[in-house]
Image 1 (cartoon, one colour):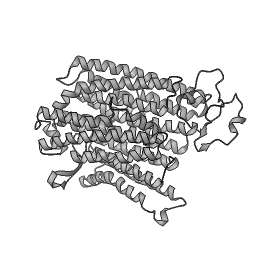
Image 2 (tube, one colour; image 1 turned 45 degrees about the horizontal axis):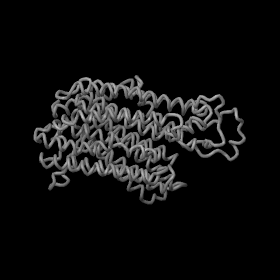
Image 3 (cartoon, helix red, strand yellow; image 1 turned 180 degrees about the horizontal axis):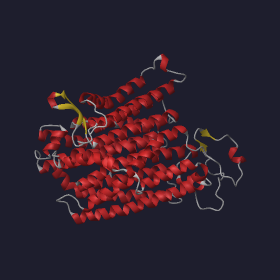
Image 4 (tube, helix red, strand yellow; image 1 turned 90 degrees about the horizontal axis):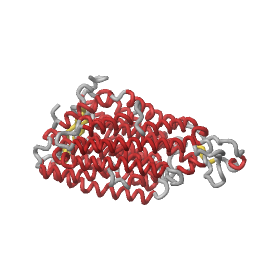
Length: 555
């Protein structure tokens, strides 16, 4: 069933447009604007260009989803297959199925919302032209990662996003941005070098880099030893990007230093590239190798769940001087642990849960980083002790709509039933209860119990954050002290002398959610509710594709 019947050639064009248009838009952003499009401010003109290009890509992706045959989500659709480098048998092979389509939509949506937000709230840094061009290159590389069906092309797209993200952190980030950017690039590049060796090993031993042909073969053309080496090499590169404990240490630094839109794209989109690689490449192409490493992957996953939650609890405690952006970054380590646990079960239930948790994390954590960025803009700090102790009645009393939305995102992140975060975690735990044949059931049930304990820890630190940031400290006369940072409205600092003239008993108001913020955040909140109340929309796409993938290309 298709909502609108669109011809195969138009679908091919739309997918190619979605991948290439941001790249062409990045080149156009660096060129001088035509006289009629400059407007009063050239900087605003280039930011408007970014909104236009990302908006066009989002519309094309939605049309692609509307024309997608939902009765056959396991079939590759909108496919293009053109010879590119005949000597290496590398082909420009594009296509989407029920696994990649939701990730394309998530990427296009988040990038458009980031471009829209940046039009009104550009982070401090060098030329806006460079900023817009980097965001568009980042979008093109991410979309290509989810659309290509050639292993070498996948690797190129996978690497394409690293340089733009490095410069977004290094040039538009906050404190310690250079160190964080270098740590990000070194970790990911070193992982990618090992991953390339694994990809080349598969290509040389099987005689093809075509991901569809390799998935259909289901590892029959590769010996068990080759599969084990390939999974170890490719999995290492994917684990760094995911990020899996203990290869996660670049993530908190990168998030803390990155500008708001950089954090949104990093958490909402880039982390998904690693888990997508596990599902698209390793599960169908090297199943014997995955079966060998699945218990270890699950063990690292549940350690990451508990470790991430304990790190968040340590940052959230009073007197720890924890950074709220850093806390949300550590929460991502835990949430991605659930995704890895679902993949490690090698069952349809677990893998579907992992894919659902992927999308839910992108929506919820993207919203959380938007909100934390807004809080930091208003207060001039993301330090939890300052936010909790220096803000009087805190967000509920000073910016009630902002406080309510932050509380909503927090309870969605902890997995409240009825919101998107619940289904992914529940399905991964169900998958761990009954893992694939050949995997130790007692071991995976132990992992399930540890993961379930991690959900309790997640609830604990998220509720502490809501209590401290939205409600403030439990003090009899909580008010601003002379040592506390002066709060800022969304559009700039308070007029001089305002703090001194304020009566001690009053709670100073902050600028609440602005119109442009509501426009950027409302879609994420709405989709979080929709996915929580109607999970069949997403699971109906992923389940047939996952069943076919695990069955070796057989429906």
